[in-house]
Image 1: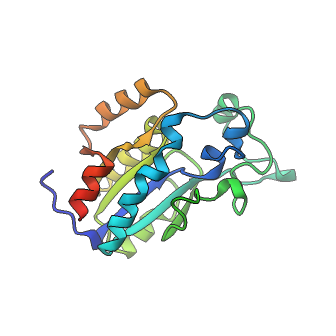
Image 2: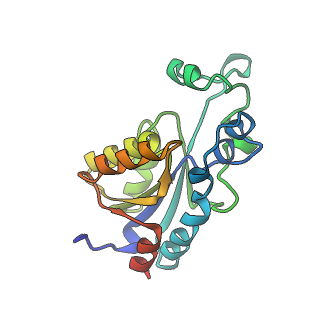
Length: 201
C-alpha cells in the first residue's frame, strides 16, 4: 500500500454492526438468522477503533434504518421484504435497542442512518467527511457483498482512499465473502484488522 495514512484525516467506517443484526434478542437473532463470522466482528474491529482514535482518527458507525411509516409499519423495499419476511414493526427503527450500535463498539464518534446498501446514499456521511477533511476510509462490517461492497464502490467514485478490513467484514456464506473480497481487490487494498492496527501504531 503506497498511500500514506494521516490518522487525523482517516475514519474507520463500520457498516450495520447493530443489535438487530448481531444481538440474540435483535430481529435477526430472534429469526435464527445468524452466522459465526458475523458475530465475531465487533471484538475483532475494536482494536482498530482504539488504535485509530489514539492517533487522533475518527470512528463512524453507519446503521441500517427502517423508517417507521403509517401505523408504525416499516417503510421497507419490496426485495428486502421478500428476502426477510420476519422484519416488522420496531425493527431497525431509530431510537430502538435493535437499531443501536453493539455495545463492544459503542459509542461511535458519529452515527449515520442509512436506508439502502451504501452508507453514502442519501445520508449525511459525505458532509461529515468533508467537514472533517477526511481523505481515507477504513471499512468493515456486514455484509461483505451488500452494504460493505456498495459503500466501498461509492467511496471509490468520490476519490476517497479506501482500505477494506478483510477479516473485519463478513457475509452469511464464506464463499460469498471470499468472492466479494476478490472482486473489490481492484478497487481497494484488503488488509486484516491486525495488520491495520500494526500500521496505525
